[in-house]
Length: 173
Image 1 (cartoon, rainbow, N blue to C red):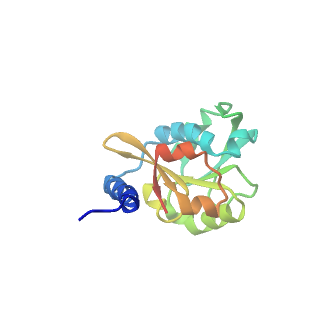
Image 2: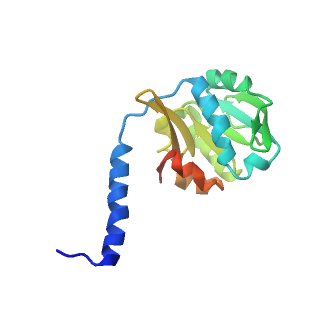
Image 3: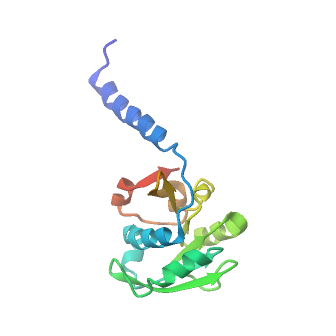
């Protein structure tokens, strides 16, 4: 069977997608809080608006270990911005933060609704929450950190990513 040049051009990306999706089937577990905090600081640079917005506030729901790790980084630069505060709460924020971190699914629907209606980035350390609608997540597989990105949720939260994030993230729709 001989494939035309156009069909071969289509076949290669489809094969690559199949290979990539097989590689993504790996078991990804929750990353330690200090790894999540370090990844947060590095990855927020890829958020086009946030990296140039000045002060960045991260609101943390059900993630006190993450909040404590992140508080050690207050004042650190994120692009031309800096991490100015980390606030802990147990419900939706009263004032709009730059980012909302969700440690577990107990407030998932409320937080996602808030983030989508306020164009606020949602992040998590629980890899299972990415498929449930959180935009950016962190995990560990084979002792290596993993970055997870939900592209559909990114659109719903009006997030403009630098395309370079696609090189380091495992994506889902």
